[in-house]
Structures are given as C-alpha cells and as structure tokens.
Length: 382
Ligand code: UD1
Ligand code: UDP
Image (cartoon, rainbow, N blue to C red):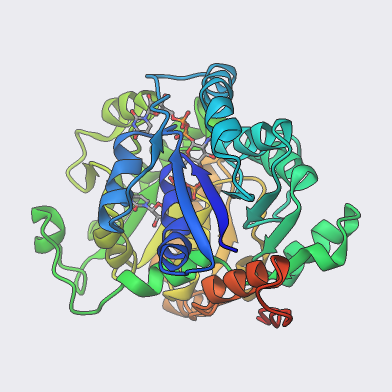
C-alpha cells in the first residue's frame, strides 16, 4: 500500500537540498508526497520552489520581518499541528537544522508521527555555535526514527549519542545531487554585473554572510576586512549577494555600498549562484551549504565562523576555518589571493559530501524501512 510522506521545510537551503528528493518521491508510486512549507523564508524560498518546479500543498506563510526564534517557532507549531492531525502521514521528512526542521519534528512527535531526518548527525557540540542550529539538529536527532547521515563522520556522531545503528543510513548529501543538476560550464548569466565580470583577469571573491551569531561585531569585522582587502589588491572584485535579513542589509549598505570594487546584489537564484561559485577564485562565507558545494567545484572556502560542523572539507584542505577576527580574515585572504602555490594547495576539487546519488540511497532506505524492498542500501563511502 502507498505510504504518505509529508515534507516540512521553510528556508532556502532546505528547499535546495530537499528538491531533488521531492522530485524523485513525486514520481515514485510507492509514495504519496505532501509538501508543507512553513515559509520561514518567503522570497528566498519561493525562488527555489520555482526553479525546481515544486508546489506546496500547504503554505503556513509564517515569515515576519525581523522575526524572533520564539515567535517563529510558535507560529509554526500552531499552524502545523492541525495539518498533521488531519493528514496523518506515515512519515514526516525534515532536513538539517533550521527552526522549521526542529519545530516540524516536534509537532510530528506530538502527533505520534514517525520522523525521518535528512542531513542528520552534523555536530559542533557547542550549544551556541552555530546558534540555534546546533541545538535544532541535536533535538531533531533525538526525535528522529530514521536518520539519513551524509557522511560516516555524521553517522559516528549519532552513534556517540546512542542512536541505533540500524536506524542510520549513510547516504551522501543531497546538496551534491542538486549542485550537479545546475552547474554548466556554458551557463550565461543574465545579471548584467555577472555577465560583464572579467573572471579571467580579475581576482573575484564571492561573499555571503547571514549567521545569527555573526550579527553585530563579527559582521562588522568581516565587512571592514573585505574593505581593507580591496584597498590592498587593486584588481580584486567582491560579489556579495546580500541575504534578505534587514539587519544585514542595513549594515552592508552602510559599510560597503560606496566601494566600487564591492558589488552588493540581491540574493541570486540557485542556478546563477551555483554557476557563479564555479567561476570565482575564492569564497568567503559563514554559510553551511556553501561549505559543501564549493569544495566539489574546487574553490577554496574561508569560513567566517569559529566552529564548523563540516570537518570533512577542512581535512581535505579546501575549507579553511578563518573565524571573524579582522586581522585573521585580512591575512588569510590576502595570502590565498597573492600566493599561487598557497592557492593551489587549497583548490583541489574534493567530494567528501556526496557523489550525486544521495537521493537514490535515501529512497532505497525508505523502501527498506517500509518493506517495499528487503535490501538495505550500501552506505556512501567517501
Ligand atoms: C535561517 C535559519 C538558518 C539558515 C538560514 C538560511 C533558523 C533559526 N535559521 O536563518 O539556520 O542557515 O535561514 O538562509 O532557522 N527575510 C526576508 N525574506 C526571506 C528570508 C528572510 O525578508 O525570504 C528576512 C525577514 O525579515 C526575517 C529575517 O530575514 O525575519 C530572518 O529570517 P530567519 O529565517 O529568521 O533567519 P535566517 O538568518 O534567514
Ligand atoms: N544560495 C543561493 N543564492 C544566494 C546565496 C546562496 O542560491 O544568493 C544557495 C547556496 O548555493 C546554498 C544555499 O543557498 O545551496 C545556502 O543557503 P544559506 O547560506 O542561506 O544557508 P545555510 O546553508 O547556511 O543554512
């Protein structure tokens, strides 16, 4: 008998990473898929839904300007509860570590609905970094019945927390499935700035910054460092698609808008963004997903955070944890951009996060779980 799966998600990265899985589930006759978006993000979520041609069955439309964690959590639980008790899916699918993820899982638990966690087992073991994501994913992990861990390190983290081994499947990360579906060396940008950018002659940095724990002094340090770098390196161009968080928009406008080597642009659709990543020299970011994507494109990433739950690419050398101190950002970025042997050391393409087959493994694991198949899928082996 067909099983009803409800996916609940709300932000840009969840939608990108869920999209390939949702498309495959839609076409699979073992499953009836119901999509519920919390719309914790609005415009940035809609961009992804449109690109991957996904339509929500339920849209909770909860985003508010400058929303608080408690306010957004309360709105999700209030609106999701009735939908879950009415739809009664056989399995709730959540992804990663946002508040939509954790509150989605918690509401499913209150309705005694089984939970599958995609991108399970990432840990820093630091309660406040990243905040609130570390606790969102730990708490989701405790509630989850099925864990799709992207790597064997993520599986090991879950085992340390006494998660039953037969409930963990190492699948690779679906972000690599998504990335491979959009990167194309012949891609032509529509955005005028990107269309005209001389990627061959200029040194081009892609910058993104949005983490809650970086708001305030750390973000000021990042922006000051980027300004300083443009003063030191005359052929440097910095492209910064600015997150729609108004706090970041205000600060970036105030500190960076008058610099003609720094280009503040709107958040890009995933298609141009992924192809931009493939062409720049270096990525400066506090994003989680970009730490997984850029290494597979051979782009060195300087992570603007003190902790990372993604150690695999750090060990491979493509990701460097630089933190948020002004001097560290200036020095490490300058070195990479001006010393080609140093640059080459960090620019080898590595794929610790997936081989593009994560969706296939997750569906096999679901088939095994629901006894559509007797065969447990092989783990992804990076
Ligand atoms: C959220 C997630 C974070 C994830 C990030 C991805 C939580 C607590 N945080 O953080 O884990 O890394 O998404 O980007 O789950 N806004 C808009 N339009 C949008 C999106 C955001 O205007 O499409 C503005 C709103 O004013 C909103 C604010 O940005 O209140 C912050 O959004 P929120 O989802 O609370 O936090 P993020 O920092 O985006
Ligand atoms: N991304 C995008 N457009 C942008 C910036 C990022 O499509 O302007 C994509 C990026 O490729 C990655 C995801 O959004 O897949 C990361 O989102 P974000 O950094 O907001 O969240 P995080 O991964 O830190 O949770």
